[in-house]
Length: 500
Image (cartoon, rainbow, N blue to C red; front, side, top):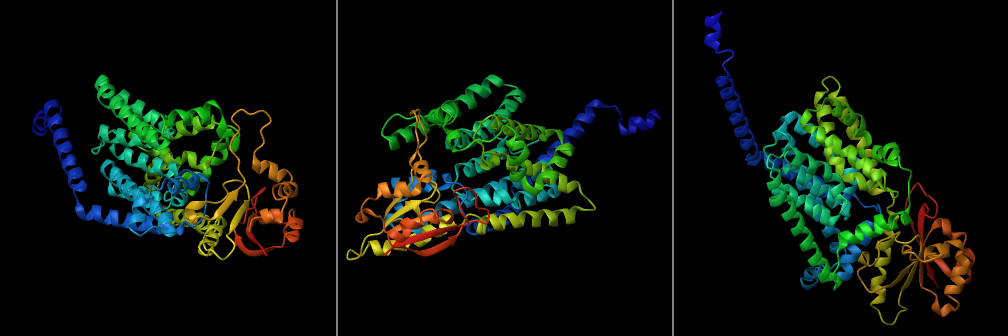
């Protein structure tokens, strides 16, 4: 027995360490070979880019006003795309679609990084199913190519995860992931909610904590804040700290609550289930069987949902940045299914495909279709002999995009609804209109000469102002489908009336 033990060197601690070292070296070489495999990288990249470009052009509906009013409308007025003007490519279609294509390409880059992160941490099977789950997520398909700050935040968070020091990660780089997190926080300060537990985890695991703070956390954070402040000051022509203003108006003054509030449990009972969709059972299963190294990701998801639950104003898109984290657990779950894996994959694909296509091509598309129709009036406005179009939107404020989708000097106006900043008895213009539409119209337009040439309204308003329409010779000239689920002041269709 002693001869056998000596022959196989059982219990020899030094040799055991050498064996582990050899295995680690072999694994490191495999990872390095994988990351340098240009054929695999090219295949994944080409597929992701093609998929996200198709994704981009299949999303032809509106989601929330912020995707226009906090991005494209600002760009239109600031002329950020002046290069296109001087290159004679200053077309409305290019100005609408170019930012979305760029967002789609960034999303594709994040898709690739997520695949290779799991490929280096686990095996090709788990990486494949994680990639599959991520690509077939209906909410990611619906949001990732939109010009929303939440979409860019989610993309940057996914990229940062690739460089985050998860246990066993061979792609980690503290400075790279911190730069991406800082950029995400500049774009949307609430990104720090998502990354707070991850930053604390990194600090806890780091051996040289002082160096991490003094050489990474503080320099990168301060540099990002300084650059952001300088850019904002240039555009605002005064000293402005946007991140502070964001907290001041949305948290301290509770302005966000002006746009709606939900009960504290909304994310747990509705929000999270809708965002993760049919992936939910796979996510829950994956959380129970995932390796220890991924526990910090499940903690981050729970932390984010809990923190956002304390804020009165809640939206589905607020928790979108943690969705890529959830896909890791879904991929692990699918990879463990042996007998029913193929059936589960087909079921997951179909269950996500239906809401993705419906929300992308049908639901709430009227807001964009009506702007495409109104953009045709730009040709009339260029003819000096004809009456100049004058368009009034009698809809809840910010129901549609505005000048970014017509890109010409049409006269347009909508019912305004600036938030109350402390004024006693404040009522915005939109509320005053909907309280008594006929009275508002008569007071606002006492003379026929002051009437607009076009009115844009939801069908639910038509009956209430029919006397005004008939009395001033307004005729319905166009009707656009908007949604199968009308609610409150938002109707099934959008009408365009023209005065004759």
